[in-house]
Image (cartoon, rainbow, N blue to C red; front, top):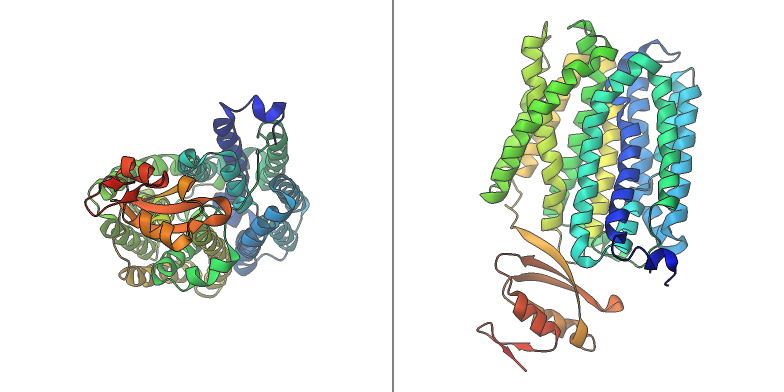
Amino acid sequence: MSDSRTGSSTEHGPVRATVSLALIFASRMLGLFMIYPVFAVYARDLPGATPTTIGLALGIYGLAQALLQIPLGWLSDRVGRRPVIAGGLVVFALGSVVAALSGSIYGIIAGRLLQGTGAIGSVILALTADLTHDRHRTRAMAVIGMSIGLSFAVAVVVGPMLEARVGVPGIFWLTALLGLAGIAVLYLSVPHPPEQRLHRDTEAVPALMGRVLSDGQLLRLDLGILIQHAILTATFLGLPVMLRDAVQLDSGDQWLLYLPVLVVSLAVMVPLMFYSERRGRLKGVFLGSVAAVALSQALLVPEHAGLITLVPVMILFFAAFNLLEAMLPSMVSRVAPAGMKGTALGVYSSSQFLGIFLGGVLGGWLQQTLGLPGLHAFAAGLAMLWWLAALGLHNPAHLANRTVALDALVEQEPGEIRARLLRVPGVRDVAVAPEDATALIKVMTRELDEELLAAVLRGAEPSGDGATAL
């Protein structure tokens, strides 16, 4: 397909597509996260509100996301990306309106559930893959990943500011507008892809689900993201209440605390991230961060009478959370076998949303049954369980995922193609996708012989000493 829209955007199309789709992704997550720091206090006065129903309202959207994320990705392969994304944004906006108009906790539960059925994250990533060349795709996915992290940080600060001015219903109305604005960006700014196809590096493949679900290393990472977001959701059920009751800080003013806490936590997190990458100490830093999450939750069990004791605990928690949030998807990408990255990330994403649901439901029930100390003690126990499971992780090698065109090898059998590519220094794993005339390879970037790889793809035969023979 070639028309004026695609032809005029050949040069800047991938950049525009990445920025536009990251904006859609981030604005949607911004709307979802803005109620985290304010909802537990606001919902206390609603008809039907108990800690359990408040937790259900906060976490219910995660259940819908967990159940629909992968199926909607598969649906977009059949009916197209744009209709699924637009439909998901409409449903997301409708759910926000339902929540904004609701005068009871049960109406907000219904609205949050409806918000969650707009589970289009995987479809946005698939459209990003359609619109970017293989060599640009990793960078595009990184931009979207960073936009999600930024949206969380902004939401935690902006949510209380907006609550003080327009209230929680106003936040839901703004969330609805963000959903509708996403539709405008989709049709006015996102280029039309020249073709749509299945991308194994970004999409879940049904035939590979069993292999991903039986991989012990990936399951440890899936458990990790589930527990991470269960703890996050449970924390926001208790922390805003603690800040209001114990520290006398109204929910509308709590951004004055969240802002410096997040800034300091990021200043702690970034050097640790660079250290783990450059020194090859991913596992050690990872285990230390999980232990820090457990410690921060244990330190929240006793009653805090002032900010002097509470602020360091908050910095510890958010620094560890942000570091793990950055490390986990990177580790999934490295651990997943060639050709299974998209499937592995699909299961990982569903685990994340399931954690949000479980954190809301269990956190609310524990708060109602055992109070805030019981909630944070349970969260600390979950983190220790995660730490024990993570002991079995291998320290992941610094492997990069690449997609290469088969060129002169396209007529050969997949087994022969795989054998040839594995003889190239630096290539560690290969999955051949004959339907696309491509191979997905995992490489050690520093060891990869780029010239030899290019020669092999042109039909040369790699010899044992790293040379080529025609």
